[in-house]
Image 1: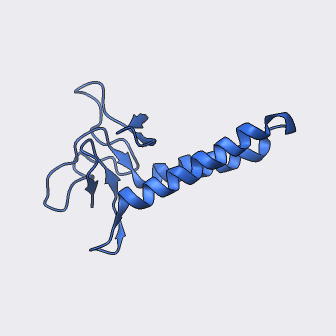
Image 2 (image 1 turned 60 degrees about the vertical axis):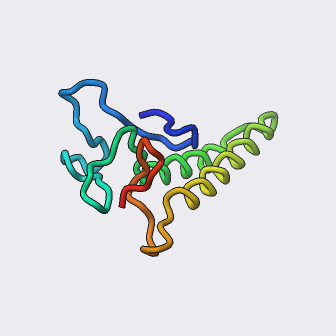
Length: 110
């Protein structure tokens, strides 16, 4: 799991041809695809994983000591930027729902 597309999203790609092509809870070989049936190209950033990252950033922010107030503010700002990027990249206005994932080409996989 790593950062994808320079957008701050957590994404995955298998390192071995023996590895699972999809590594989220939807781990069948064809569970993440585009609306036209093409399989998503790695790295794949699953929508729910971005939610986990957002929750982790906000959850960790208050645990810092007073001397680390600047770090707390940075984590909250990072969470806010992640939320803004997520809304911009994952929301599908024509379908009125969120994409399942974002792919290597930064295109949503519905």
